[in-house]
Length: 163
Image (cartoon, rainbow, N blue to C red; front, top):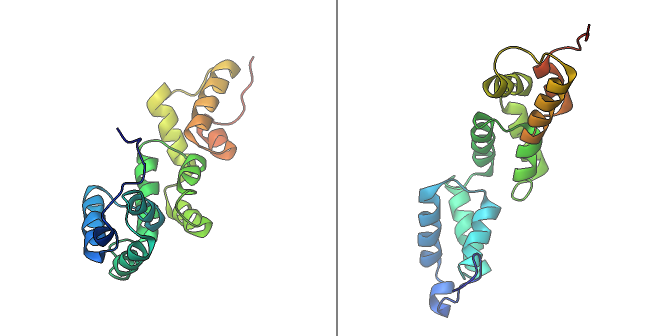
């Protein structure tokens, strides 16, 4: 059994055939949207030649079938709905996209402070934390989810007195 992600051995004529590459790309894109670099790597892992892959990707990008800007926007929106914050989303996208695309998608995304508050309320309920111990627990949860310290501070409310 071949390890997951291992390069496959395709016949030379099929590995260089743009139609075969296009068919494989279409099959992958039928399942979900991909960043161009991610799709390129998937096709290379399937054993296609880099020249044929790059040619097909250029055509798909020209036709806007593969669009890194759209991918970034959708990825940010999807992960934000799942309760992930911008720090974690940025880290996930770093593998496939340029920093400028990632930053623009995060800026165009939701209001992250509001989103952190919604995630906190859905996990811990509407009342704010009653003491420092609980505040720390909720802050760690939001930090794990990928929210910045500023977003966490706003989600937990201002400082309070222990008296």
